[in-house]
Length: 327
Image (cartoon, rainbow, N blue to C red; front, side, top):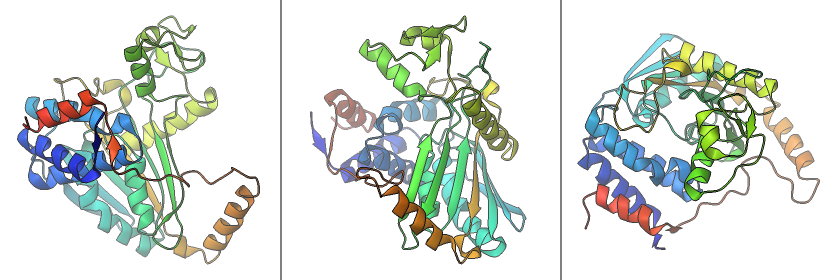
């Protein structure tokens, strides 16, 4: 298996996106997100998605030339209409205005609507935290989760991400997780590998627990913590769709299908300026100190090191080069 530098991953990804119809500045933004995912071992959100991006650029499910429109309807609210383009460039266009609004008001609502899937939500909350903001983010996805006691898919995996600055341009803590027991990609990868899944991850089409990934994909995923996780999934659904103008999960078509209507998803971020509380960073230090009392314990997101170069599967890198038109 080849070892490929992050620079080469980013450059090849950008070339592939441009070759399939994305403008250079838009390809730049998406390629940086792919680079970050591969650097931290988030395979599901890295090159694994590139073929889908390229196919959907060609079929029109995502507009690679869309020009995001940024508005500020209220002092503490910034809205970006992605115009059915990628989430990454839309977020980038609204980033500085959202931070300015949070500084001015103490908190700010940052809504990105009518966008393609953002894949890794933590990629976005981390950017805001590195600029000094405490941020809670959420999005929704195609329906794969039934309510507790039910069997009809109503919600997506509906991830939630939370990032906290350390006061020095770094990250004190961060988590990025689906509101289901496990991300959908873990089940699709288990199916591809011919492996069983643990009981408690999913139910079959009749609502019965299953360890068969194929039956799970024909049924629904289970909310983390049962009804408690279901509540968080509903919260993400209402904010991600309601505050951005994006569609509800039930109307989201399969995200990686080459053809079909645009994703039209929303990503919602609540920004909080820690400068509104002189005690914030002192309390953060106290909490972190308590977490570190036990050997091996750490704040979420700490100890994560980027890898460069990255070891890739032969087939993945060959496909990436082919998408970029490299022999």
